[in-house]
Length: 117
Length: 113
Image (cartoon, each protein chain N blue to C red):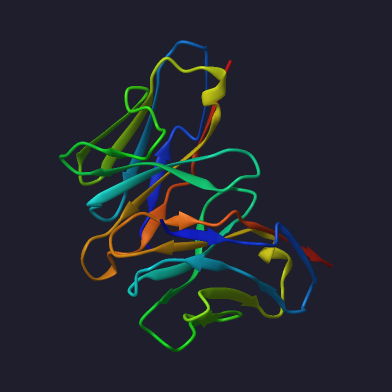
C-alpha cells in the first residue's frame, strides 16, 4: 500500500517556540493531505485539509494563524505550530489522499507526538 | 452534518472467539464510504475494511467482515477467531465523495488469552 511518513516522530519544545512537522507521501502523489489532532484516549479530530498549491481549509475552531499549513508539492505538506503552549501538546497525524479511482482512501502517517514544556 | 457514533467505549473477547463492534452514522447523502480503522498502541492508523454505500454486499477481509444496514445507518464490524494482535482501538469512519473523514469516538478492544 501507499506509504506516508512524518518527521519528527516525537518533539519536545519550550513554550513560545515554533515547531514544524513534515508529512511526506513516499511512493505516490497526494493531491490532498489532511492534518488531525488526537488527545489521549480520544478520537481523531480533523484540523485542516490542504490541497497542493492552494491555501488550506481549516475546520471550525482551529486557529489558522497558530497552525500554519503548507502544501508546496504533491509529496510534502508541513504543519507549523507557532508560539506553542502546553495546551498544544498532543499527537498530530497527517494523511494523504490519492486522486483518481481510489480517491476516497486516505493513507495515514505514523504520527508526531508534540510535548510543549 | 454527518456524525458517527460508537456506543461501546470498551469491548473484550476471549482469544479465538468472535466479537462485534457497533457503529451508527447519520447522513442525508446517498453516496458515501464507510471505514473501520485499527489503531494499535503504536498509534499508526491501519485500514481494516471499507464499504461503498452503493454496494449491497457486505465487505469481507479475511477474519473481518461488516454488517452494513443502509436503511438503519448501521455499520458493525465482526472479528472472527480473535487474535492477540487484534487488540487495539477501533474507529468507525464516514466519508462522502472527496471530503473529510468523520470518525467515531472509538472502541477499545481487549483480547483475553
